[in-house]
Image 1: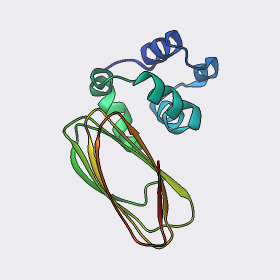
Image 2: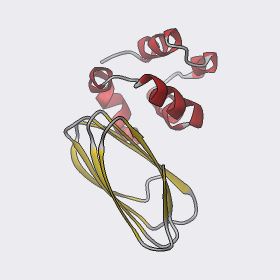
Image 3: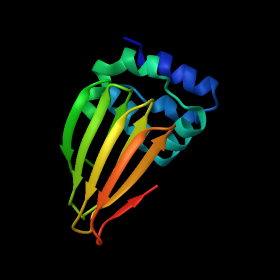
Length: 142
């Protein structure tokens, strides 16, 4: 499995913010991935690569980053990511107390159902298949 330090060094060499040096474990690395700055960096650089995600799969999956993980049925996750062509998400959002973040990368597929004034921020990095189903009260922001 790729070490956290190796991932951070690659990101820093690509221009990531020096503040990312505060990452010490998988949980904080995933937290950084979902921040606005982390999302912007990953979108701009298509980073991490699918190969890197495959190497860190065991470390990030406990924090809702699913790498080639088959079909996952989820609901109301604050943050969730689907990575790789073997990942498919069936997502339902009806919690209107926060904005939910969904990241899709490297050929993953997701179906997103929103209702009851739920708001989802969809980050589709690359050309991933995303199907959206929403009622008149909810929003899917891209």
